Image (cartoon, rainbow, N blue to C red; front, side, top):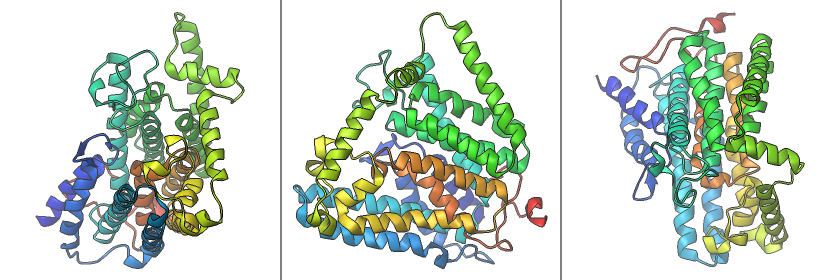
Length: 413
């Protein structure tokens, strides 16, 4: 009975992982739910534990180094109080994600496939809201004020995320997980609606980073799993969609189409690209010996051009010095290292493709400010840390009332 309760409670946690706009006291409901859920999970004692704590040592080390870097860099911040607050929230977000990954995997609350379905459903809900906002003008009140003050033709939709880029990244993750699940379970009718919703929603979030990540990650997944028929079918569907759009166009185009056209006409020298490049150069110019030693602080007053730095590596050095860079390396190394484990190819392909989306977004956006970027890769990194004999990845749909205990037939090959 207690296990059934944990499975239902865990479903709410995972389903809210992409809904960062829903907050209570400036903390997302996902973080509140995880804070309540993880201690309850750790009270559960299964007959056999799953992923050991040692599998999370890189993530734990990264969190510890980041805490030390945050303390040291407080001395150089222009606003120490805000610096401490932001660092505390950053550490708290990472700790909750790592804690959730460990609790679910160690106590075997779900298997890998069930986690992927829940994450994909979360992303699909976010994408569906973006479609409702852009196509029907419904739920536009969820769009943060700093993104859109009134809905205009140039307003980019955010769905249940806080920013259009974040909404696009969530859609990319959802598409990749849905596609990977179909390759693993061979149940196309189950995941196809989620794949379609996540792909179509990118028209309204209009994130060029997400579109590029979606394309490269899809190509990576199909090549890694040798799904050439799916790859060719995808190319054909995209070609037909573009042809239909051009044929049926009445002279008006969507925001994504206009942004892609503008990017082509300016040969990549797009206005937002120029702004981010200028800020990135300014941040790099401000990095000196003292910055490498202690960082420049993490408050708003410490930011160049009053903007979040759109590059995770540069931002980690700028804010926290070399220790910040080391902490990021350890955190990223936690899930990248899992690519060397013996998971089935479709599941490793999902992780690899999610890493492609993560890398593009990490190097072109404020990675530290968006916990939703880290949730899928951290959870997959935790679950794929098991040895073959320990991992249960049933091919059935998630049944929240009871665990799926059948082994994956692909592992027997």
